[in-house]
Amino acid sequence: MVSAITVTEDGVSIDRDICTRCGKCVEACPNDAMRMMGSEMSVDEVFAEIERDMDYYRDSGGGVTLSGGEVLSQAEFALALLRRCKDEGIHTCLDTSGHGDTAKLVSLLPYVDLVYFDVKHLDPEVHRTVTGHTNELILRNLASVVASGVDLVVRVPVIPGVNDSDEAVAAMAQHMASLAPEAKIHLLPYHRLGSAKYVMLDREYPLGALAPLPPDALGGARGIVESYGMDCEVAV
Ligand code: SF4
Image (tube, rainbow, N blue to C red):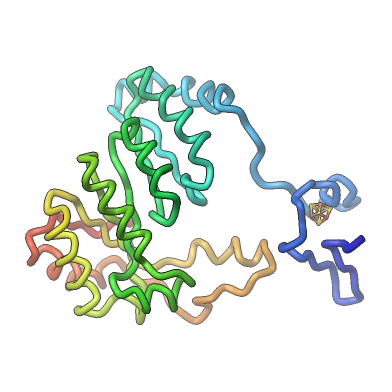
């Protein structure tokens, strides 16, 4: 049998492609050097957690945001949870990369008050180069969200050398102005908060040499978006 764990004199490595995440190595480790992140929960269990903050939601007008990972990879669970929230009058937000099954996305929208939708680049080939996939599915899904009429915030992670040029920002703003002029645009300055997760997974951080962007570096990009009549803010 092939083992996911290899122990050499240089240390322990795990082949994540064949690891089944059974957790037995975590239980067996005598030095508590490993731990499982997250746990499986039922819809009832998650909703019980949500209910504990019900007074806070009522007082603040806040609500529940389903985020990721990618919510669309657990769409059936998300649908059941969103229905429970709507039954109780809780405001719901879906935060998605847009890269997922269109039918599943559309099935969630009747139970969603607000969608946060990532748009990284309008050029399909640049998008493929930086993410491994073209953006056709994402832009189709974005159009489906717009067609549903749900409130929409398009979130653009602005990454130096990838999508921070005036041309790239203008292409995104032009697309949104013609597709959904009522949508809001949030520009998210590139940060490195995800790099620690790569370390935990023994993976190389692909943007290792890239410095974070200070929020005030995005004033020009914001001006470009606003010149297309879009409501825009730099979010941190
Ligand atoms: S979680 Fe399970 S499959 Fe993955 S490395 Fe540990 S023991 Fe092996």
